[in-house]
Amino acid sequence: MQNYRAANFSIHDKVVIITGAGGGIGKAMALGLGQAGAMVACVDRDFSAANAVAKEIGPDKGVAIDCDVTLEDSVTAAVAAVIGRFRRIDALINNAGQLHRCLVKDHTLADWNRIFTVNVTGTFLFSCAVLPRMIEQGAGRIVNFTSALGVRSTPGGAAYGAAKAAISSFTNTLHQEVAGHGISVSAIAPGLTNTAMANDNMTSEYMERIAASYPGGRLGQPEDIIGLAHFLMTEASKHVSGSTIFVRPPGG
Image (tube, rainbow, N blue to C red; front, side, top):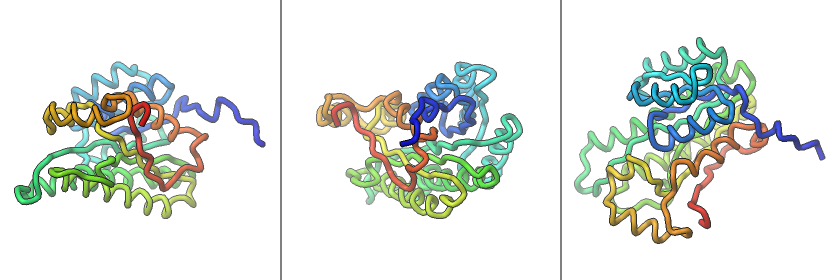
């Protein structure tokens, strides 16, 4: 057996782009990976929020980038800015997302399209934008965020669940297309997590009921995702690709 060293788990000086890094799970991952030694590009359409996170990471390792993940020119400019600053891209975490709960019979086309554009098109655009540099490097990690609702949705979650299911399918397809270039593509599927987005779209009674149903009796917290995201950035995960990995609260 090869010598299994702590270095296999190091992300020191790895350059990571995180979309939706201004709050919630994205912010937690940006801060956690920054503390673990990564160079983090905090991408968000709310530049002030992204900038606050980047400042907390530190001026040498954190940078904020204003970007709308639904606009190709904006995404292209964001990736160019990261390459201009750090000269390489080791990992992309497609975390930016949007949730809108509504029964199918009441759904507007505008809301449906917005959910798909932010979640699915944003993931597609950023993946396409980083691939040329990753292929040139002969290495890279792409981690997409889907959801447990992509497998088992609930009433009111048609658009979000369908969009997250699409991301899981996209993840597996992209993995097959780029594995020969030394690039791995995986997806993380959290359960219900205590974020502002969840609280803005679900009643407290609903969230309390879900929390009570989880082993451990609590919702997931954004910080619960950091360890898995860290692992997927490392050499230890180089043979993990094409899969959607589900995250549950402690005991789940």
